[in-house]
Length: 349
Image (cartoon, rainbow, N blue to C red):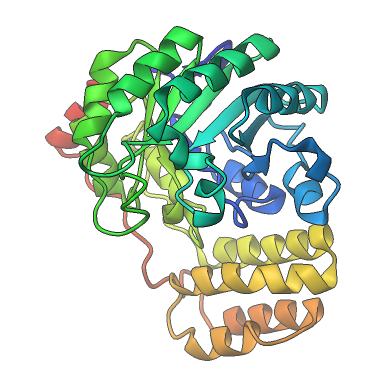
């Protein structure tokens, strides 16, 4: 598989973390990079810089200045407002600006932002032109296949983006109307890949190693963007990375590493947000981690109801103390044998 480059930046891996509001905060991004994510992007941030002093925006604009490239995602519908926000992000240290035209949330779309923009191709052009002109760093675009199944215009949007100077595309294989229902489709992503010369990153329902190989085969994409597949399972990036080096020995996640990952994540969340908010945010991450744990119902039930950081830590340590080494994974996906079709899928990219 060829290296994935965005402007002057060659990523360490073609497998990147999708920006997800309320999920991919600074602590989670650090965990994913530790497991080999080639790039992580800040949570979607409003282009209205007058709102950047709110607690939510301050957390979202906590940039990963120690991890190159530093990528920030912004959302809005006014070209000049987005251009101003992009310049402000670069001033804070951003090395890549990502524009969100993929979010299907009603509160975003009702402001004609996110995937709602796909309805107005002329406005898309004005936004992309304005942001690219405003900054001297690479600008990327994340979008969906269209507004609904009868109006899939991703190829048109992709060509507009390439002409505007966008340097990479990430495409979620659903329309805005689909939201997150049904199965993602990849033929539209393949059509976009055939239509443009800039890198194309496929996104949507990529949760297993087998699915990643299937998506690479179907789309010929330059990289994969992992979203929900990384929730409670940040080590998916290491598993995917092993596909690029099939001679490496199987590195099944050990009990001690899983325990330390969860504890480190909890400590980081408590430190980053403070105890009250950190404990609350940690609850959803603990719930997702429990999907990979055996006999975790009681642990989950108790851990998501406590109100103190020390008690979340204590319950997590207590849960793991009951297992021998190489326990308690339940859904750990074993690295598949390197079959000829897997070799082919990677060799052709």
